[in-house]
Image 1 (cartoon, rainbow, N blue to C red):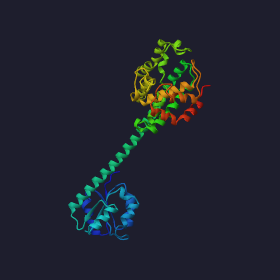
Image 2 (cartoon, one colour):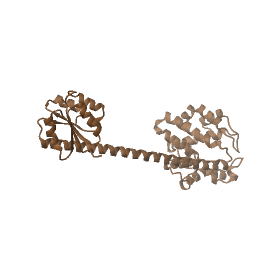
Image 3 (cartoon, rainbow, N blue to C red):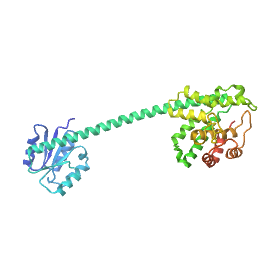
Image 4 (cartoon, rainbow, N blue to C red):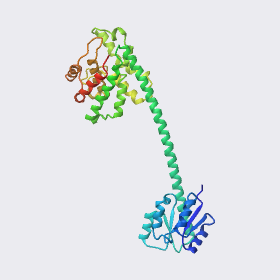
Length: 365
């Protein structure tokens, strides 16, 4: 409904009549001589009133009590109020603005000035109201879009998890490992990653990044699906040539992730690529395939590297029996399973008992 009405809240008949004459060619004009009548008109015509001209000295309520009552009834947020007054003091004007007035009409008033003032106030207030409606509508629209994107993101995340689970299950089957292996790798990665995050903020790890590491770790051995059975399932010690083939699972895995796996998540793919290629690098530079040294190895690859070693030591394989968790811990701390950074070993020490709990929870049948 268009706001095409002016309400004149004025007990002086002559003043009310003169104001009505100024606006009657452009607006519908309603008049009220006291607060009770004015409130009745406001309630009945609130959606069509463009502006209210009010004299605070009207009968029944004096001074600014009228504005306070109108404010309590929420009229001041929906309709602009202009004060009609003979007062000229700054304190009086300040009080009016504090109560919610947007401007003043001073008596005796000049028709042209009053008309221009009211037109300006109405235009600005209606623009403000339209802007608020637009913002509200846009906010609702964005909210719905965000909800839709959230659902789409959750769907994509679920699909990524399905793909990763399927691929990791293939690797486990290929290596004659139990389905618990990948669960251990994921949970151990979260555990160690969280410890690193708390101890070493310089790595800028977050819960979100650790969650990505968790899923990316599932594909750390994806390259083993191309390793021949006679090598990957060999019970005895590998010869030099066979060992070189086994080592190639890092580069083959990275290649598979880069060229064949579509996860709809660029960051996850980057982490998975890095972990698959570099989880056998060692802090002293004696790892493979690229001979990275120290902090050249990403913290994600360092975390999964230690986790992979711990799980391998505490698990039964075709070529070895499982070590007790205490023995596995000491072997890693003492450097018997390759070099790790002092920071990573400190973080590992902090969660030693948590590691043991995870191993028990997801033990092989």
